[in-house]
Amino acid sequence: MAKISFLLQGIKDNNDHEAAIRALLADSKFSGFIVSVAFLKETGVTPLADVIRKHASKMAFFVGIRNGVTSSQGLLALLKLTPEVYAVDTAAASHIFHPKIYIAVAEKSAKVIIGSANMTGGGFNRNIEGSAVIDIDRNIPEDEAFLKDLLSTHDKLKTDYPKNVFKITAANVETLLKEGRLEDEDYAPVRKGIKTVPGTERDTTPRMKLIFKPSKFRIKKAAAKGKVTGKISGSTQIIWASKELTERDLNIPSGEKTHSTGSMLFKKGQSDDIDQRHYFRDTVFSGLTWTKDKKLPHLERAEAEFEIRVKGVSHGTHRLKLTHNSSKTSKAYQQNNAMTQIHWGDAKEFIAKKDLLERTLTLREIVGNPTQFILEID
Image (cartoon, rainbow, N blue to C red):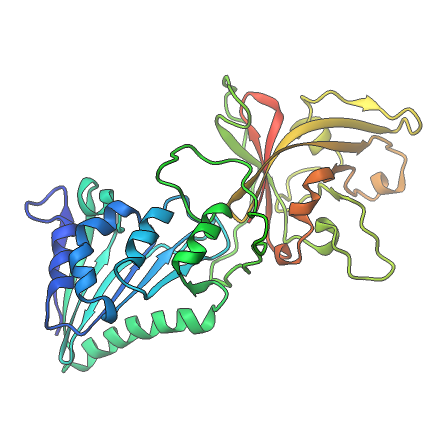
């Protein structure tokens, strides 16, 4: 039966993950290694450089990207030591690849460290991190079954999600950085307005089909108002979330008789407790300056600034127009239909994409600033 011990970094003496993982990777009896982590930075690679290089041909790394942490410097440092490095991109900011598993395999035994430590300076030394250290006897059926499950799961990642789990090379690290899927350790602030670098293929990574219980969004009471400085900064709170986005929402109609409107109606979405005819005009966007259309006075117009975030990547701030139909005698109003819409304008190039179908759009307000919002498709 497997022997299990507990590693608690920062609390127990001689329990740092760097030393434990170094010992695991340096052990010559092991003939294969898998490292599977959410976050990787150069500070997590450099301390283990010699042992990684020693077993370079026997190792495979699975590293999460599009998570705001994994850096280009970390991946480039790792690629100088070993070629078998795979990125895991869920193509969503709300569901990221998050394991921390270190596996070493021999003919009759194996050892696994599984817990909370990423390949970063904090994960290896500075943070309080906990892991189980499991010594496996491959002659015991239960131990062997556990090991095979670990190994086969990582093999299946590559075969089941070929567009999301792909091999990293030095050549594509720069592209991933410019697309916003990797971080730059030399530039700490959150980067805004990132677009795919000219000449490279647009990011069309499909969202991984993951198994989660569906959630139901509820409108919360407004938080206390606070002072906000700068553009699209400060405390935020979600004030609306859509259902799965449709072709009409994204302005990519496929039917011959359906035309692109350049806009999207704000409907109930995931909130059953709102009146979609009034909520957006009278609550969400009540702080905007609304004016009546000169030719169609029942239509009210306003503008606001929206930061557009798609799959966890910011595409900058756009000043977009809003229209509200104030007529209470119209057929749409009488049938309790949506009355407020947003016009995508120059943001349409980031919205009208088929790979965004069935995703969710959330609307965040900047607490204390009634004219700036964040729209995020994930």
